Amino acid sequence: MEHDETGCQPPPEGPILCVNNCGFFGSAANMNMCSKCYKDLILKQEQAKLAASSIENIVNGSSSGNEQESVVADAAIMQTDLVEAKAISLPSINTSSFAEAAEPKTKEGPNRCSTCKKRVGLTGFKCRCGYLFCGSHRYSDKHDCPFDYRTAARDAIAKANPVVKAEKLDRI
Image (cartoon, rainbow, N blue to C red; front, side, top):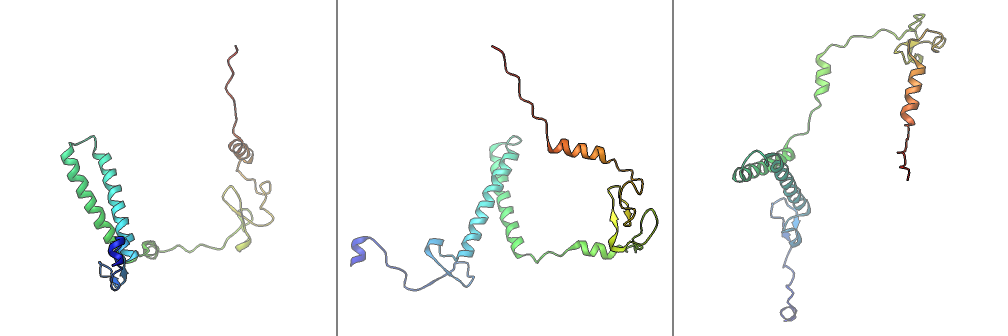
């Protein structure tokens, strides 16, 4: 009798299963869906709206209104189908590993100094000119490096410190 006077409805008699039959319990706040199914539904609706608006913008200047509505509706249906297909699809397989296995790798020789041909292994120094050198030839003056350090430094300084020039004031 108190419920009739206040206008409140009594809570349901038992727990409600999700309407998507996923096995979880739903709630009236989520349209009798579990939280995961409800989030998926909201996501699909947002993606459909986004796809419809983007297609409408693309088609806007090239066709009439009736054709636009049919194209937008078809695109929205296609978009939701793609979302469902992605959710169902198997995990992706890394195809780059197959490409590497198909191409035979050329065996690289031991790392050697470009000047004296001494084996350097892991301790070699790679110069900016692109070659590998031993400890005694690692400096640019020891191996006649063709790299222009002066121009590279000027460019780096110019890039880091752009010229700021204010507009001139009009004299009164």
